[in-house]
Image (cartoon, rainbow, N blue to C red; front, side, top):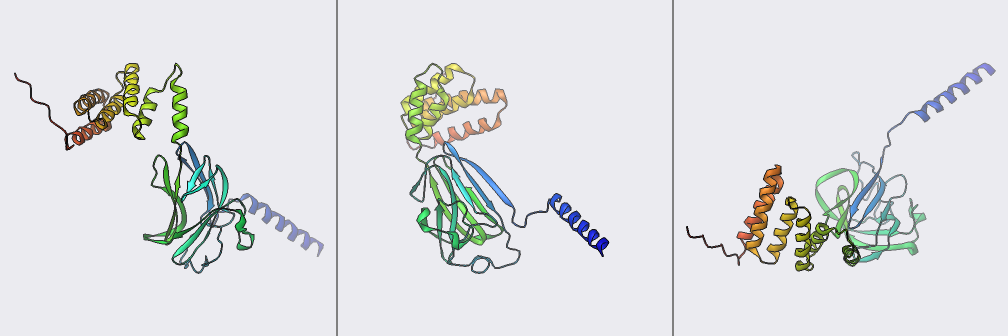
Length: 290
């Protein structure tokens, strides 16, 4: 009997040791997303269950109850700079991402709590953001639960929560202009100046185009064969309604791009010149007499 018990114990220990060394796949695999946004980034960590033929919302995930917005552990979101979520200010930091699904509308919550995995653990007093969001329908079926960041812009993006044919979205914005403008002023006062970057920022954000033109000319002086800088100059001139100058700068950019074999920039210049010539106030230059 002792021998049998010893054999059984050894078999159990062997089985446990084997199970600890085998990397069994997770039924709801954990994923981490790191998305550059504005002047910093947004990070998400969550687990991704699959529907597997089940009716999810209203069944696996009940309506009207706090949901961890994923599986396994708590879902978290980290902002590396101050942002606004659906208009509500959120300071840089790490938060829990929770939700209360409904048939037509969800409550989406960003909480100070990082470990809420059940309705009983939720405390509304720790909400940072609590917004009602319409539940939309998607054309395509999402088998595996997905949180994604899409519609990326310089200062805004959209966070989508998708499963089955349901989608809910949050709008995230960042007001970084004052910070960037101050940094540009400080850096441009020094000897080593990022003329191209500063000019590009002013152009993209519809700031002082005269200043942008001054800086882009300085960038050209430093690197006269940089066709991407000539293209930026042409764009600035176009917005200043100096169409003749814009076409001249674009033509220079195209020549340099052809010499470097950069088809993308050749096409960009062709498109820009077509846009210029389509402007209502564009006047074609008179042909020179022979």
